[in-house]
Length: 111
Image 1 (cartoon, rainbow, N blue to C red):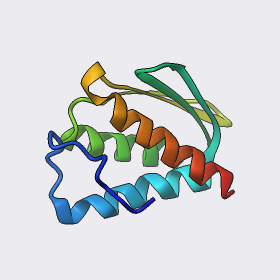
Image 2: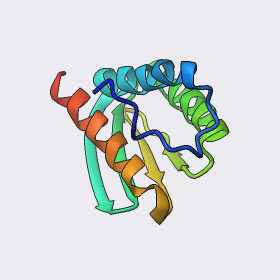
Image 3: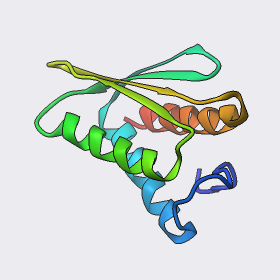
Image 4: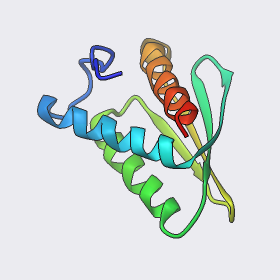
């Protein structure tokens, strides 16, 4: 899934840095994804396997993503074995959440 056409114009991350950010998400998903739920069309709920530094890694990635894509709302729920990550968007960015969910699912299948 290397095509980045789904990245919205409202994203302020420089174009040349986008593949690197996507790779960060893909790595997190492929290494840590334990569960993926879509409780609502505009919300994605991920369970990520915990471990040393995992929560900090997630918080760092979320902070960097929030800096360029302000339409995301991230909620991190710490846990001993599992870190919860809720990702929400507004109606205008549902297709972005769809793409992120598809990337997470694809990475999770490769585990």
